[in-house]
Image (cartoon, rainbow over all chains, first blue to last red; front, top):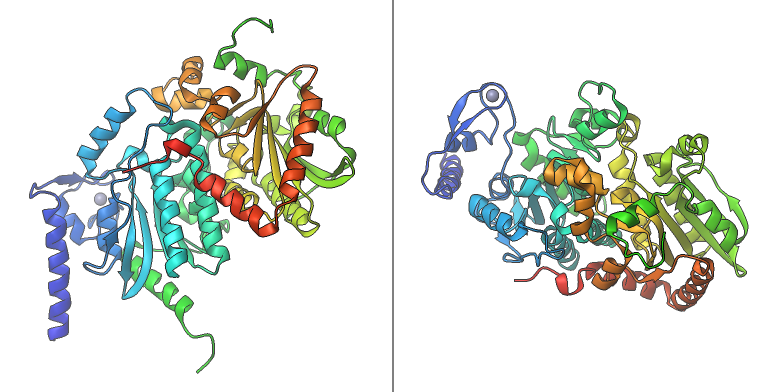
Length: 285
Length: 265
Ligand SMILES: [Zn+2]
């Protein structure tokens, strides 16, 4: 009984912390699918799944870490890295400031070391609320450093992607991040590391065509849009109706591009299970 | 083009896309001996938008891989205007693995408006195919030399362009996305492509200054001799490196590709 109580207590604590991080304001969310209105705190308790219709709300990077990592186990790395605006894109610095104020993030990714059911992991989470989760030099650098840390510390690497692709405002520097991150995760894998890539809604373009598609194990959340070229671009190019469920997680699973589609409420335990199988003994007992 | 006219980045995009511009087949014929095309991904398909094969460069066996465009409409339909599908990237990966086995350097020619945005291409795993092709190129245990000859657009180009040494023809362009696509995303207006070109930094000169490419090959009568000279020098330099040093050197190159523009605290 006391154990159950302790667990509940921990959960409450983490929920409280989550609530505090919204600076006490009660943010009301409306479900885009069924229009049900709900306080964000209540939604957080439901793992950001609409209790009425089952719709998956986008989860911020910090909230995702709360959902996946053991309470208080996460330590952020490389916080404070900022882009140098390499192509001097007009208005980019201002836009970044705006995004920082709005999201409390420095760029579109949070990386660090945490624990999943007691298993230590290097974990990175992209945040689609920050410039569509697009990958520029900061996202590329932090993902690369994360993979390098995982290699050095011999930790499993878990990355949750949510991204519109490469960041236009950093030009070819962003394209180069695809090469850089692919090199980092591939080298990590080649030295025996386990990389679990989790694709959430949406994972597209330059992120889906680089590190995010290189997982030893490929997982997606239900109904996540996963593609290289977006549905609109394809429709414009070929002028044809797109098939039902096209480019959604279940469609990719059916066509051999994923190992599994995992519900949000099961994600943590599935990740832990995969990690345990890879860290277990090499002989039968 | 007049010699003394200053070309805008958009002018260069137009030049890079010209129908009569030399294609990968022309370069192969001029630069190599005994070229033999090798086809197919061994997974059920052959995508002609990628031309691959083996050849000799001054007696040295090499593997050649490039995006293929045609000069006639008929050819262009066959080659899908240089827009590659997963099957083409998988063929490229197969040929790279083969090059690794036989310790042949790989020379890639890049000229694509981007990966093909189609239903089948997406269904068959365009993202995975590009990602795996980038990952293979960038960890390959033999030298990879890349020449961007026309338009090098987006992930469709990068799939075969992350070489040890990356060169651009004087009027080639290399970009995160086609200027039209860029303008459509940034301003929701594809017609502002020319304006996009001015801020995207896509010309050989701009990219060399940034250190994102290693050199420029002049266009004109001297193009082929400059290519030969570059290939000879780079093959000699890279072949001297041990397998380990080569791979480590390439990792470092892309690890720090931003140079002074690396993100900082
Ligand atoms: Zn709902």
